[in-house]
Amino acid sequence: MSADSQQPQPPEGATTDTAALLLSGARLTDGRTVDVRLSGGRIEAVGTAGSLTPGAARVDLSGYLLLPAPAEPHAHADTALSGDRPGPVSYATEDVQRRATEAALLQLGHGATALRAHVRVDEVQGLGPLEAVLQARRSLRGLADLAAVAVPRLLTGVAGADGLAMLRDAVKMGASVVGGCPDLDPDPSGYTEAVLEVAAEHGCPVDLHTEGADPARLARLAAMVSGLRPGAVLGPCAGLARLPGDVAARTAEQLAAAGVTVACLPQGGCGLVEQRGGAPVRLLRAAGVRVVAGSGALRDACNPVGRGDPLEAAYLLASQGGLRAADAYAAVSGGAREAMGLPEVRVEAGFPAELLAVRGERLSAVLSLAYSRIVVHRGRVVARTSAVREYCDSAAALELPRQGRADGGLGGGSAGGPAGGSAGGPAAGGGLGT
Image (cartoon, rainbow, N blue to C red; front, side):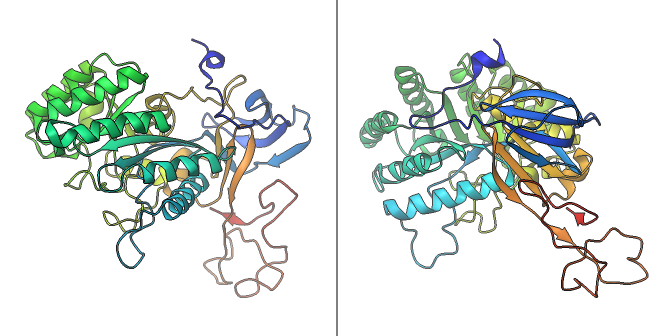
């Protein structure tokens, strides 16, 4: 299937910016420096630097590495940004909507133009948090694509009857993915059967939480979701790392045979699983399991310091998981998009214009230190973060590139203006941008 035929329709009421935009002088991971012209929400042309004529707008990406934009496969929008507020967490619709919107914008600023948000639907809070997240999704149209995952608490027995009815109502309301946590139900297999039934009724993908500490239970879960198209997502599966090596390896082979994707959470856990720690990424990949990385909890009771930064997740996969930089970034970009059912993105003509420009020359450097970022969604710049590092005058810093400020900067830096540049472009000149 071609990239064009895979392109999803914009959400109801959304618009695509059709004005042409030229990204000039961008560096690609293969070392080329190119111009990229965007139009109609897609990449129209890629040519050598200086070869493409600008349209109505131009962004100078000299000194930036241009990448396919990351995607966030595992966020928790209903509890995000609630950890530092006094008293019990408010689940009033306006409070959840505000937190969910703020969290999505934070992650968009980091580069994630598509997000999958898990939202609890249960007998305590009802469907109110889901409605709030759906309202946040509507307010984010044109900035980022937000998909809601309905996460019921119980689905089996007398106590689960209401949960099953609520799950069906959640999908009718607009939840586009069916989720949950079988580990928390007295009958995990029955819970999974109920999820699969609802998903089949409505043609929804399946995305389930599991600790993965019980290899037999995880193998049964994998067998039950085997054959789903697109494949089911399971996560965070950190319990696999605590199993004996041979047991974990056999379980990983069963996950691969079932065609499931494991969404690990290298930046921290989430409230639906008890244990912290990371999934055995290298073991899973060696068995042929597709592994993607999400943020999980974002400054809530489970993780008070979550960042929601996909580049940090990739950094942790490389620094702690032992992945190559390219593989680590793929886990938060192309792999995450595929797991979420989104079309592939390449910096080539015809592909969706979902892009992230990060100041730096190589992917390894970008994952190590990446403050300055420009985010493109549907062909237009939707977020920009600029950072300039300055050093005071000293013998040690004399040979380092500096960008002075009008007020002299730190210790009277060299002449020059503050970070800025022409409209639509990042700071020009010799600043040490990061």
